[in-house]
Amino acid sequence: MRALIIATLALAFAGGCSDDANNTGKKDAGVVIDAPPTGGPDASCFTLTSATPTYNEIINACTSAQKIYKTPHLPLLGSDGSLPPLP
Amino acid sequence: MKTFVGLAFAAGLMVAATRPSEAACGVQAGPCNCSDLPNPIYLQVGDTQLNLMKALGRKLRDNTPKPITLVWITSGSCPNIDLMYHHNPAAGITATMSYAPSQAEAATFTTASTPFSCTPTTAPATFPDIGNSALFNSACTTEMPPSTLSLTIGPRQGYVLAMPRGTSETAITAEEAYFVFGFGPVMLQAMSAAIMPWIDEGQLWIRPTSKSTLLAWAANISVPAAKWHGTPEPGSPDVVNALVTSSNPSAALGILGSEVYDGLRGSLTIMAFRAFGQYAAYYPDSTATSRDKKNLRDGHYTVWSPTVWMQNTDGTNPVNPDADYVVQMIAGHPVTPAPNFAPNVTVAGVGLVPDCAMRVQRSFEGGPLSLYKPATSCTCRYEATVDVSSCETCSATTPCASGTCRDGYCEEF
Image 1 (cartoon, rainbow over the protein chains, first blue to last red):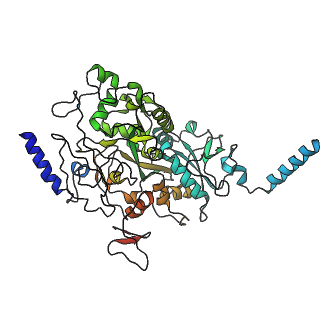
Image 2 (cartoon, helix red, strand yellow):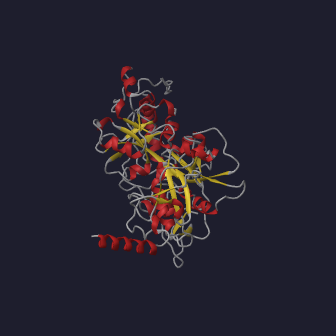
Image 3 (cartoon, rainbow over the protein chains, first blue to last red):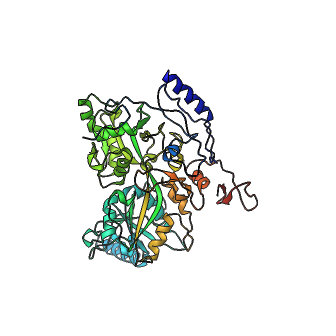
């Protein structure tokens, strides 16, 4: 059920993603945008409307650039996504 | 035979006597005295800046309004900072230096060519007019620069992770890189936590801890420089060689400056990178095959650093105005007299991103990004130089519908 909700939200947000408002350059013809895997990273993106967006909003801003979604299996990662200390 | 030798010797003397003053240093075969070169400016730069030295050095040799010879030597960013901060004479330059020949000296010289060489003054050792680091100085030292040293932020330098050409891998996440370089494949395997395909400890090719390439990556994946696993290679060409001649190419992974990768795209495969907290992985460019550095410029690709250019001052003014001319030019600032070439085009042509094309900034290595608006934009000109620009073009007779007409393009501001 949770996966279904995430997938639904992802699709809803994805529909709202457009090219950068400030993109005066090339269009995204021919650009491959891989689909996020089910249960994978949030496919949503942020449209930057604030003059001072957060770091998280900047690195996840909507873009026409090629994206690659990846969900590696990392057994040492904490359940909350935290990194274990280095040896 | 004696007559022939005598004639040849006499002819040689005549040629030498009629050489212009710089010709003695315009011979690739052997070093000459650097001080004999026209208007030499001495630099100690990071090896990621080699192509900039060659390209800009060439342009400045032939810069009729103010001819300058860039005479450079490469070293790690951290030693460069140390030298400029402490003026330690024992660390002055004594090794052979390089310079780019003028058009008259070598018509076909390019950034792929071997630069000419010269011998610096060694008693006392030559101290550089300009020092360079290819990352925030604070990544090397917590020490503040002396009051007699001026620091100028220059174009941005991207860093990449690359594998040999032919791999099926396309991306790496910050978490994966944390484990691969911070734990090492051997330890990960022992902990049943191997990360495919990077499971061969002997196939991680890195740089020494004094180099910007390693320090920039270290800050972006939260693995301190001293804790990295892999084989440190002295130069970027060594990393490239290790990758392309790898005995286990499907597991080989190396760190490089983006300009090195750009020049070797036929031999290497770049990994898109997903930063901590990011939803997807991105290339420095908008696609795997473009060269626009769009993601680096707008914040989607986070592994980049500023280049920092250090020059000596008397506390207020530059000690060497011609060194300042070079520094300001590299930083994209107006200089007088105006050069007979476009410095930002030269900078862009060697894989660096001029300040005027950036839209994000940070204040320390690997630090959070915030939006940035330079004084004037050169995005269209930059994209036209390195890739393709679909910006509207303009001229005195065809003004822009919006924005500002600059260098033939309708820039945003």
